[in-house]
Image 1 (cartoon, rainbow, N blue to C red):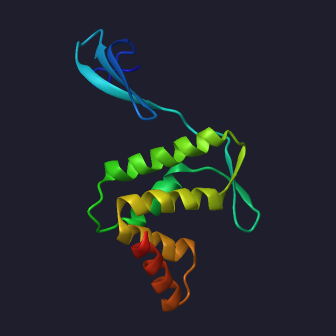
Image 2: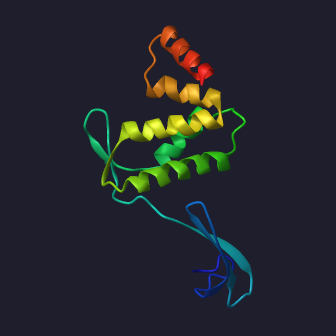
Image 3: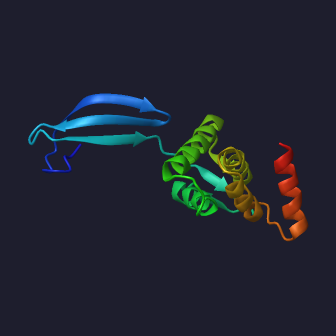
Length: 148
């Protein structure tokens, strides 16, 4: 691991912790002795997402983060909470152990976790994901939400 301060290619690990799906390593540069932290994540590489229209595209964490962040815009939700939500979704996708996953499965996971995190963000996401085209559809979802 290259030192971000002196760019030396040599560092040693002084501490290692696992949190959720991430490995945190505290490192110290062998040359300049400065400390820095690195994080390792398991990536969902080569996972295909099958869209509603049958198209397939590679899974993109950034696209998922962006969609969740848009739903949480101007809500009391931190970026860490959004990242943790996406981490949980990815963990569930990994547990499925599939090469192709349906976008509907991912959308339902987003709904599940947003419902727990922030009800307004949940409704924002639901209105786009479920393609509400009337106030009645919106009201029905709110009624379901308040009954849970």
